Image (cartoon, rainbow, N blue to C red; front, top):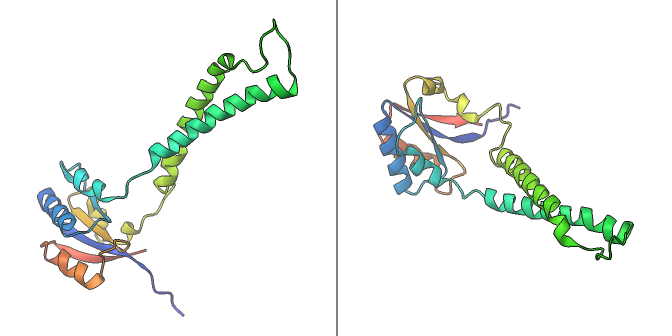
Length: 181
């Protein structure tokens, strides 16, 4: 039995960047939030319309957790050997002399923050992703030459294949195609 490919979204093709910008704005105004635009060059104003439609990215929280983990790791890695494992009385100083631990704690905070930022970005961007469903669109190779595309994804809460297709056709595109996963 043949497997029916799942639908990723609907893609509209436009001839000019102005048409793409207007279509993205109208899509946003109509309530679509899960959409992406593709063009051969940067279109001024387009990122504000499309990128703001994506979910807020929790990267700052991930970096904060990584930094706090680094700080605590630095503290524990110095506290355990100096206080519990092998305490030495050096000049009558207390075993837990935390000001001397600050440089290592600082360095591990920076290290863990940077690593969590890099790996968090990779995971949140679904990388590595050598394949993307929009490559299945028949004329998508023109996105790197002279055409502009707007794709509304099926995971958009407002997505209904018939209504969304009628909406995209109402934007006066060159073509509207279904993008399979």
